[in-house]
Length: 152
Image (cartoon, rainbow, N blue to C red; front, side, top):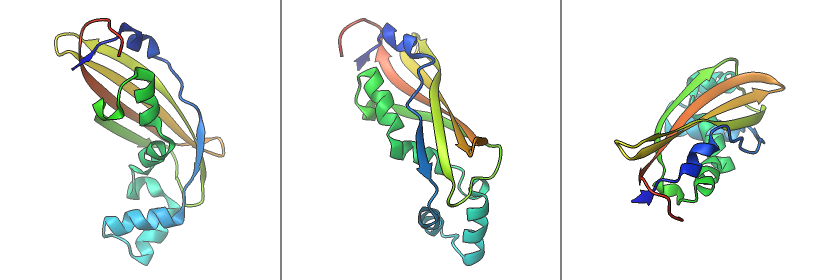
């Protein structure tokens, strides 16, 4: 089991590097194929507003950009030690095929639960297209750790 590091608590407010990603029609089509819902009408509809059709696509963009690996690096742990505990998305406007999405993410909260020996990290992200908020998300990661200050 990992040791809990008090420095983890100081990471609250940490801002991950901003990145941009393009929503590619081919990727949307692959997702629809995987879900076995791809028909010409479904693809056209999904490309007009991806949010209702593929709400987890923004999370996939973050995975591509290595956000989870960056979090693990900040914590000085292997990424496979992080449990992805929860995620939620709010659609504020359409996200379309071809959109260039700017993504900002930060650690909104870090909390240590000594009784359970678990540290929770809440990451908030904003997905903007041409300065317009399209999607916001919240992801919670957890690490099982025991209390103590030792080097990783």
